[in-house]
Length: 625
Image (cartoon, rainbow, N blue to C red; front, side, top):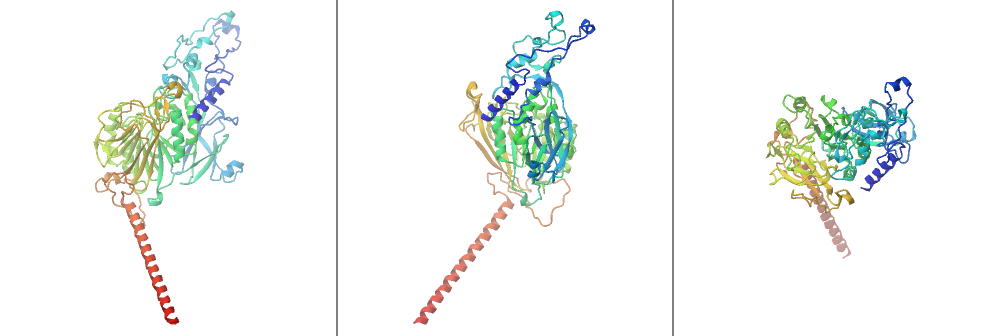
């Protein structure tokens, strides 16, 4: 929390030092260019105020305290091919469109060019958008306000600068919106107020290729003040050497002190990849907050690859996907998808299927047809035994918040996921935590997937209460608090899943902004039955092939190594034991047998040595006699 408070304080100081305007000061006195007499006669007396969107944008781009460089919002995501990643960052310089990378850290640190590869950005773009004002921007349920109401009023009230100086009068010009409201006007802002536009920096995205699985790479944008690194996820070869593999899970992140705690928890976890199922920045149309989120997210996203899909906060509040799609690329092209929001991607022993809640999902839609065709041809259970789906809105949630919002999508797409044996479904949207038992069509079904709703990343809308009663039979654990989860694939049949909370909502807003980081915290109104629990740990075990052949189906043409044998089935139990699988038990049994054999050999050797020593002693005594 202290880090976020310090970040916001520094941000405020920087905005106040821009020399133009801040949320606490007046707007600058506008300087106008002298106009020819004929243009004055026609009433052409307007000149766009100095600064305008440029001032607004730079106010939200803090500089590194130790250098003269802008923080660059650097992040890495997995690319279209198995040997590639996307590196995304911002810059004010269009020519800063190259990324340097190497496995040799010293080469990049010293500037020595040997063993350094360069990759030019695939795209370098900027964009402008008209602001949208959302009341949580200055009056959130939780967390420090990201702006003040007085600042928004100043942005909207153009009467402080739109005045004519012709003949010394103070006549207002026409065609410029003059808000007289003392409170912010919510919704889409007026196009004819120049201070209501956001201009982005230049957004660069470069593709690094030729990367080796499991190797660490060092990299930097050509004008960056920092050296970054990431590790490529492991590649599965279908054997036990591919395990374990840890995956980080988070949704509905935002940018509060709780969000920062979630980010730090994932950094400490150090997974191979992070899955983020939508609702990243919570900019909600105040687009400069994508910049502040990028800076907050950078310590995690610059070192651990992230796979994401979009949520309602990426498409609603006039966002319309633009900021998200330009800043956070997805590997959709590599899976034959024409939409960045749904795609497939192999990551080690896991095959990720990203779906889009906010795209067509009927049986005539592009998403439906892509999903059916992809799962029918691309699933290789030999190399990727685990099939994981991520999407934003949950199909199974017993919270009152957003209840059954995605019901039509469930009815359309759930049969496909069941047919091809999806093992785990990750969602968010509902700002609470819930884990289900294996479920299909609203009934317990051991051949169905486990659904995880982790909409508790820490955003400013707070957590959702109450829970619906009675609790459905498929709901295994539910709690209204904040945390992140880890999914550790132990072998072909068993994954250890763990969720840990680090905060609740509650307390005096004027003191702690309604964020409670106590281990004993309880969110007021949490009637889920687990409000005092600080963690949820379970083992997800694949059922036997004989009972659930869908969970073992391969649709891709694969060549199985002749030297490797695989278990034909897994235990039917979905209990909390990590040893409930044939392969694991075989290894343990062999180890025990070897240990017993070794122990027996040692005992025989000791008995032989004692007998020999006794015999020698008796012989010596007889000879002395």
